[in-house]
Amino acid sequence: MLSYEDARALVFEHVKTLEKVTRPLTESQGHALSEDILAPHGMPLFDNSAVDGYAVQAEDLAESSSENPVRLKKLGYISAGDTGEERLGSGQCMQIATGAPVPPGADTIVMKEDIELEDANVCFTQAIRKTENVRYQGEDIPEGRTMIPAGTVIGPAQIAVLASFGFAQVPVHRLPKVSIVSTGSELVDVDVEPQAGQIRESNRYMLAGMVQQETCELVKVSMIPDIPEILKADFEEALQADIALVSGGMSVGDKDFAKPLLKEMGVEEIFWKIKFKPGKPLFFGKRGKTLVFGLPGNPASSYVLFEEFVRPALRKMMGRRVLEEALVKATLDVAITKTHKRLHFMRGQLSEKNGEFRARPLGFQGSHSIGSLVESNALIRVEADSPELPAGSQVLVRPLKNEIA
Ligand code: AMP
Ligand code: MG
Image (cartoon, rainbow, N blue to C red; front, side, top):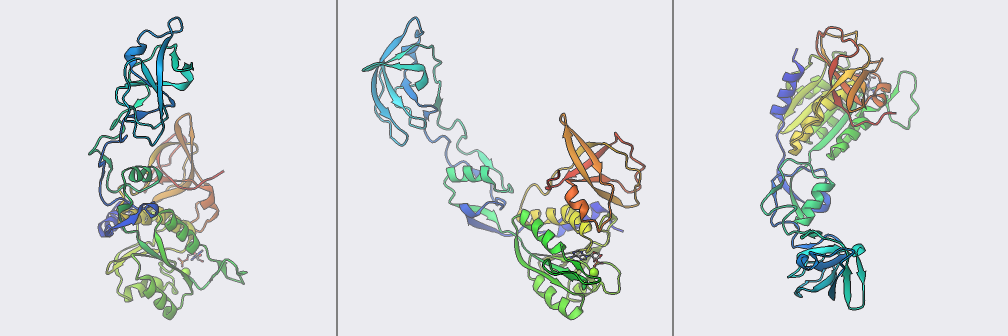
């Protein structure tokens, strides 16, 4: 059986990053940049004041103190948005607003709070440091610097930089189109009272939520019974997406039609079954440009497989540099006594105390457990055939985007 590492390598090998497109700035969040963003000019754009105050020549105030107040003649007021062309000479000062251009001749700004106003003069009673409160052209970002490397996902900070540099249109990669099909004759929808033998369907909603966390586009989400003719029609539609997620029917049951049917419909099997827990029957295949993940129907399996296989695949397709949350080192709070022949990503809880990560696995690890999903905020990696891990052992842990009490 394929190892977790080999299976992930196969997934990454088959995932191709999507085309480059441009998006309006206001619709760019969640996309990955397709090009490095270089500063087309320095930032700030011009020398300007960091405070509301008075522009001066520092030399005039070299001796100023409370015992030796210095008076400078007050000229006009430069507000933000003014061109600030009037020259300042020795013995003069000019009122200035935060963000207003420093007038020629001035080299320092004194805060408004530190002066006393007289009729035609301003009185300075404190020592100052030359260049104080001046924000210099280019000091934040020099022209030509790579401000945001290609592959970075766009969030609010990137949007601020892109806006400041005039990127009304942003070079990004197209977002993946994703379809989700939940299969199973026992499944009923959320607003239906389950009859004997039925259960409410949850994977479709859960997986859709996970896809939306990555801002990918859901093009089709459906739930269908294990009836080959119905499955086939639905799969055909799902296979038009960039990634199709099929839940259920991946194992060896007599009614597990999904996998053989996908193959019959031209989906090439890249692998099926991995040495991994939970979610051994993971299927990965491809038809044309469409990648297919066959996820076992057990909710915890689907959830963990999405984290470890689908999320990083989506991110690679999106052109993102960071494919997943890095594993962190944590100390086990309780022993892990039961280990397995397969690599196990155990649902657990990660906490931080005095700058150190602590981890504890949940007691119940059933692959059907939906209770464990809301109680875990991390996956604890336990190697195949691992010896028992006593409390205090160091483990690797994948933090999850999930808030727990
Ligand atoms: P399967 O992978 O189809 O053999 O299903 C494995 C287990 O997961 C069974 O107990 C199913 O009832 C359950 N299951 C399958 N699909 C879903 C779903 N979409 N939502 C919740 N449970 C499911
Ligand atoms: Mg089933």
